[in-house]
Amino acid sequence: MLERLQKIISAAGISSRRASEELILAGRVTVNGIVVNELGSKADPSTDTVAVDGKSLTIASKKLYILLYKPVGYLTTLDDPEGRPLVTDLLKEVGERVYPVGRLDYNTEGLLLLTSDGEWANQLMHPRNEVEKEYHVRVRGKVHKSQLDQLADGVEIEGRKTAPARVSMIKEGEQNDWFSITIHEGRNRQVRRMCEAVSLSVVRLRRVRYGMLSMGALKPGEFRFLTAAEVDGLRNPHQKQVASASKTSAKTKSTT
Ligand code: URA
Image (tube, rainbow, N blue to C red; front, side):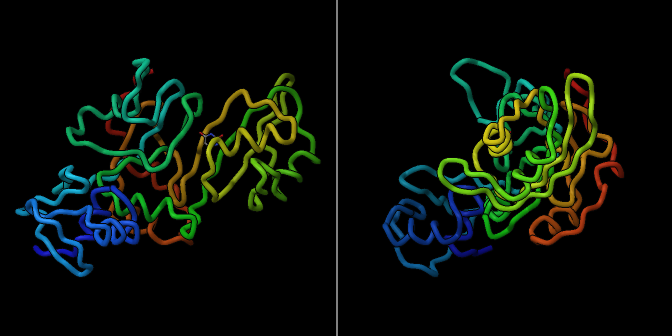
């Protein structure tokens, strides 16, 4: 089926539709070896070879949408010169290349989406989409109300204030307190840096909700496929939360 070139390029996860248009206009896109630099040009991804800067795009025939409980000690990058474990190592049985939607730090655990649908991933990560992400944070010592208030109002990281967040205390302990923070931005190491800004030392960080998706029955290292309703729901920025993960059984056993 013929599709617009910018749609094919963004579906392959190379860039957003707008940025794909710029690639086309810049003459960096070829179809079957011929430069196509007119917007509106079409190709058939199942029969034509579309390339950007000479590199052919890999176009998944069937799109995959996966929710993984990333354990601590796994990288969300696709390779590591130091040979550390990668989240994709946990998805070998899927048998197709999938890419993380955004990132979680090596030492952060919790919900991570992976997909072969680059356009969907770009939509979710676009700041306009404002998908809510909730984290449970365990800190060394006590959390004071004034610190939670500052986090909720927004703190300055790298010269720019964070957007208002929802915060609440979860549990107070002898050595550690736990609190919840919900943000919709996706700045690098955002929660850890927000905590640093109010002098809180994070000892554990877990993403427990991504938009409408909560952890449900997933254990570290386990994953499940999203339902069609969940895939569509995440495109919609103001989705309702459903404990959807609990309705579906996990597909693999924990590796930890
Ligand atoms: N915030 C962080 O600091 N780290 C993560 O992995 C995710 C959000």
